Image (cartoon, rainbow, N blue to C red; front, side, top):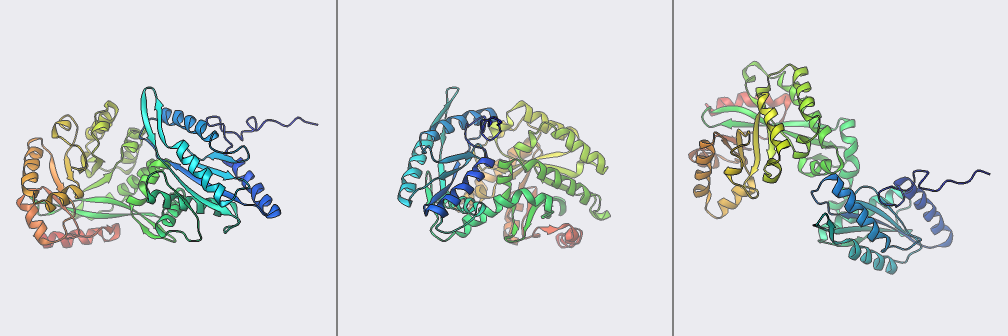
Length: 434
């Protein structure tokens, strides 16, 4: 008789954490449910999410090992835990009452939350847990895990280091987040993304000089989902780069189809730091532009203000690569955090885009004029153009014109529209402005 191989030799134990893989987790969950049905006991499925510090991959792996060591002291020998990622863990609590479940979950939170040390640096992790107990409601493995995940999102809304036990009703907001997370990996393959464009108007030109590219997700159940809901998740699960490539190819395709009168406008494309830092970023961008056979001057890449990141040499090199190809760079969300024009003097930046929350705060405190005029003067002295979003009516447009802002964007001019409507919207808007 052949000797049975140890689980780690069979690839069923994760090398980093020492816990079962997802495959073994599902097998044990199936056995747990069968045991519950036969002996009338209960199993709790716990979905754990740890806050993710903004650190390098090697640091995440080290922290993951530390989390695993702590977790071993928090659960019983009969329980099963599996790391789905560095931040997500599913735990099966076997043969447990609701009271025992509450005690164990509180112990897990107390053990996993707090300070972790790596190379003399401390990182604080927070823990959110969602719990679904079988056989109280859902009957199959996938549903139990999904409901537990939805409860995890409810726990996140409750605050720091909280847990939520399923009691027969799923919060609508938590359910939405869960569905987005589950379905996002399939969205690109299914062709459910599409692009809208919002015109940008030049003060001196008195016409549309560019458009901002805005990705949308048409979900079969949830309807239209805007990027603020799914792009942060795409960054987390490693889909952001694929989405950027799809968007950029679509934009290039649309640039070639613009009407003759609108051939000179630029297309502004959002670019995250993680996308910018991909090793083959320069090659991919060059290949897409060359294949499309269009002029690079059609593109502005919008990057979010982050002083710490842009001081890195590799980031500056890639921004300069875009600039050398003839593209322009816009700094988005300016004023959202710490900022100083001295930080940007050496960066290849063409546009400064004011953050909406920053503007709203200035307006509430009657400081708009006293703050924006010096910013405009400094921007112009450095050769930057100043862009303002959120222009909703004629009065706001007049006020910002007086402040000397260079480029305007907002619903006063046009809502975001699909490409098939863009040429007509631009033509109508140009006639109105003149």
